[in-house]
Amino acid sequence: MQRYFIQLSYKGTNYHGWQIQANALSIQQIVDEALASILRHPAPTLGCGRTDTGVHALDFFAHFDSPEEAKLMDPDFVYHLNCMLPQDIAVKKIHKVVPDAHARFDALSRTYEYRIIFMKDPFEYNRAMLCKNNLDLTAMQQAAQLLFEYSDFGCFSKNLTQVKTNICKIMQADWKAVPGGLEFRIKADRFLRNMVRAIVGTLLDIGKGRITEADLRRIIEGKNRSDAGVSVPACGLYLCEIEYPDTLFVK
Image (tube, rainbow, N blue to C red; front, top):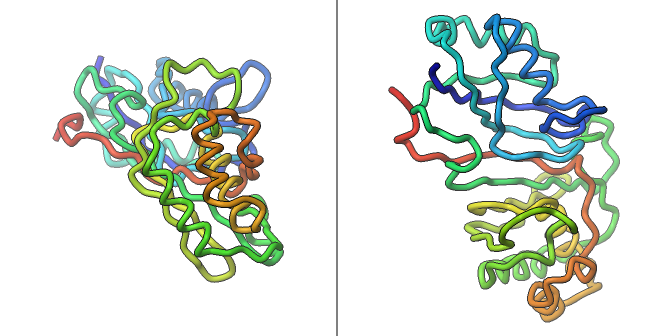
């Protein structure tokens, strides 16, 4: 058996997240069924993370094992696999990796984007958050820089999750104006469940003048989820980049 990474992207609107669930449709279920069909054997995947219902991925990795090296390395394999997948899931590439490569635990960093639009746009429906408030972009950008001063982000984590630590290393946190709206980009070595959506919701409270930078410090240091802002809608969130060591990939 050889290990492989499958690199894909998907629009999450019609799915209850990446991870297989008993009574709901997931991206993982669709991908696993397609792989099993084309490979003629079960090839269960393990993803680099679990995106929530309605969250999108521009770049996502999962690993699986298979003895069908000739078939998987055929340039036409990705084409045939994509023919079996729905239009909102697309495979980019199959990577041959070292035997112990792990799509989740070997990731060096993950980068997310959150997209906000200011006017109703039918072409952005389920792809961005509509915000009608006037936002202070400068205040939001300055507040985002406070994230670099902390490592415990329990205040932004979904309650009752089973994690060993709330420690994360933030590597990037920036707002920028784009035509018709705003984008927030954040990169870290790991993220807690619901963390990005809670951070964005809290920074929007600063942009609306509801709280100050001092309040944000108090929220982070208090480590209480109920003190932070509401989680923004999933439709505006995109997992856009996963970084791995080059040594994982077999040339």
